[in-house]
Length: 283
Image 1 (cartoon, rainbow, N blue to C red):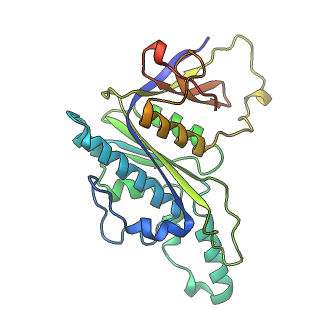
Image 2: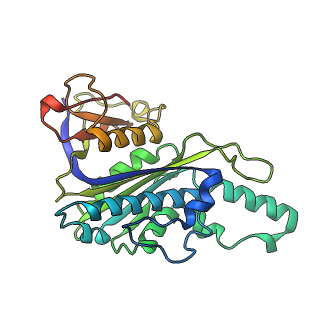
Image 3: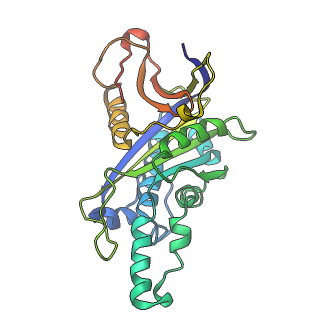
């Protein structure tokens, strides 16, 4: 059996998906009900930062509009954990092309801060005036697992009342052209989750360890090779927000989505509903 280790309600969530061709318009588009960004704040931002901060803005707008929610004004003191998967590749490719053709003078100084692992978390924190700690994790195919473990662990830190968890990825890793540009139909996606111990939402994120009686061989602790899709998680969250969850596949344990970690644990996104109303879908 599994035993609970870390758990936290999800106060609100939001998802954003944008094709590369529409990224320019998204940089300057306001979100009604959300804190506005400084003018031209996203002018040099990576695609992951653009969709990530947009998802947080949309979640903030929903949180602020929730009737009788006293926690809406407190979310600006949350921590920020952002986990981009493969961020910065197009900008880095374009930089190398420009360097080859025009020399060092053509290299933009923005490429370093905008393409770093911490760029998404820092932009969310600075742009939306969130005053808790912020950190970037992941960067590669293990971004999801590192994000959930970090966010749930960070909630135990003194002074951290909650956490904005921001996940970003391309639906399919884009094939860049000779200039380093992304195809216009490539989709970059973001999921933002507000983790708040005081919340009473219908979703709960938990990390469950699996006790083992035998000694684990070092070779067996490697991470799994099949990585669940961020797009699949986004679709499930959209369904959960729209009608309470996906179609029933059996009255199991209320688990909506799960992610198996390589070191013997599971991250679960559970429906906080009565047992007879619980639904489950396998990732």
